[in-house]
Image (cartoon, rainbow, N blue to C red; front, side, top):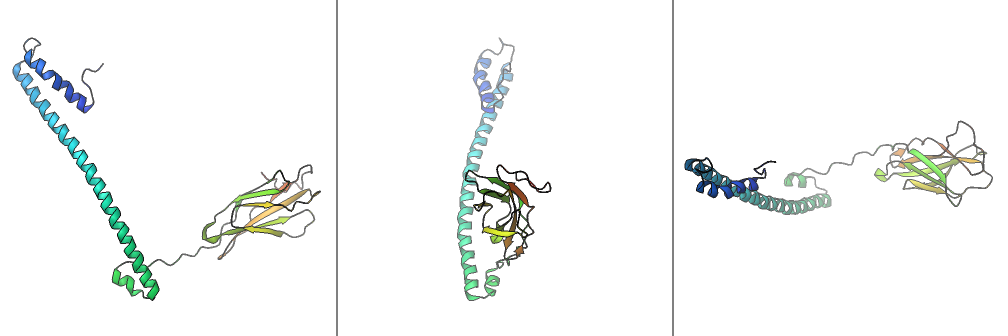
Length: 217
């Protein structure tokens, strides 16, 4: 068990509480008056340094708060100025406004490119007997998705809906149809993606379709 505490303040207090009895009983406990006086000098110095460090920490916290407040106010007003300058440049169609203000003009919008094909398309039958579809894909740059379907007797895919989301419910599920295939495309102004990997949803009570078709997860 450690006799002297390791916490700084408790460490200093330990010796502060003992310098007087050690001084009064120096000879009896095997010490000299000079030794105890030297310790007392060091304890006083440690206490003064600890107090100074605590005061410095407090001052640093106060200064840091003041700094953050000043930065926040400066940037808030500065941002308002920059918005006003840009509005002036746009309203007058004068790019020299940016030169006079010594701020860069807004960067031209980067082309969005053709969207990536939707992935991880899944389909399941809900309690109403409808097919609930979901998939993964980006909605950036105004992307939306079209959903296509092909039934056993169809020779071509047919679009059954378009949605700016990543879920779709096919309510047109006719009785006695064994299965239906689904595929999803992503669209934006810059173009259309390749189709997702088709999935096949088998309806309850029907046999599985061709082995080459993927059963919906």
